[in-house]
Length: 634
Figure (cartoon, helix red, strand yellow):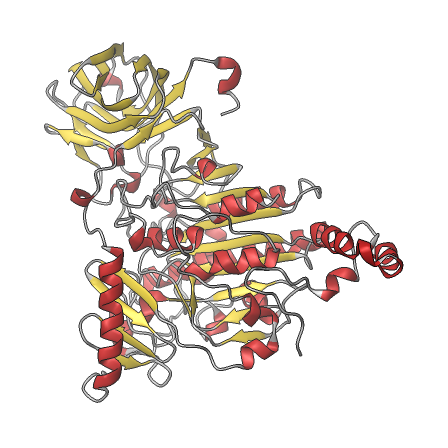
């Protein structure tokens, strides 16, 4: 059944919008329009304004294509996630990136991450260029209340921070992973706060609250959950059903051989928690009367973070094979998408910005360059468009020196392998030797794209300092993951995102950050640290060294408070973690630092360190102190 058609520019208006109005004025307006044709355009505009859909985008972290019962996983039931497909649409050939920060960049901008400066998942390499326009900015400028709750992973300091990129409210964390999921240290619009309970439950509470705050403006919520990414830090109630559950392996022999049952059980328990929380959101929308006019999108950021059931797909997180790139994408919109819709045309994270702005009938706005994504709105809302054979299109992927191309029928790899995906879902038979023409065509297209985007591969390619004191925000966080270490100091774990600096024992040790001060000013600086009682009396030095070597200010503070010993919620780990553990950090003032505009170095050292283990450093927090009347509005 043909519902309605939206043009790519979003100019067509669904006919059903003229049959209902939240203000009960549709009938009167239609009568007026029939009597006074000159008012028709005004009527259409009023109806479109009154019926703008709410939008909620749910992105999960390290959940693979096969981690839902919709895709045949025999080890888990995900009725709430599955219901989005039953009551809405499936984009059946939907692709993301091999790892998390590139996918986030592509969703947020509608452009390939490789052309925007993203080359890593940490230490600044996750930031996409400042000239890019985000989906948050498009919806904010279109009259929407905007919020992001969860794992941002696209830059920590403003103007890379979510509050600087189109989101009125942010609650969560900006790193690539988090080391504790229970009452964790998070941030709210830049200020450090304590979370409440299990992090996914907490993020869901925030989402439900934001959805229900008022009806004057529609909402756009980006909800990037940070599970089932490790560590496998799981509530007892969610873990219990999976603690001894027999696990059916994946049909792919390589996945089955490498499967680790404890990790698989943990991942499934976290997915089940996600499904339960999505159920809470669906119930809240019903109670708020917003179900029909709310678009919900569900997708994942990369392949699974382990060898478990994935529908026989080859590869996992980090791979540019199908198993590393294919994601579910489910879109429910009762007012606009017919239940049970299935779209076969290939699509990807880059398509969500143009698709959602089209469905919401708002302009994208001026972007840094042409969008790589295309609107799938016609395929979602028009049965005739879906029935037409998909046009030829290439979706590109690159990560860690590997690249591949997905056309409607094939996946081609930069290694020279070619697979006919429509008949070989698991990429088992390389047909490059039997179809040299297709191989040559796709090889030419992939190499041309790689040359065009000029992929960065390492931090040496990236000269961007970390911003400090941007006028759009009151607080700037400089975490340990972004610092440079001199002497015997070292990070607590090889995965830097949620680490702290340890082994700070010598007065010659230095911890520095290369920054660029966006606007000159004076900042109150706090140190988040850990120290045993025998470290009290350690004298911490903080100084700013402006471009050219001039010392702009220096403070010396004596440590007077010890921190609580031990790691947090270790007993909630259900599988051995690779990431580091987290402690409860104390905060102490390091006084004030005055910095001029331009590049500078922030330096921590200690003239006297006491105690057997010295001091552990988690982060520095800078708070702009001048213009106190306006600082609270930043």
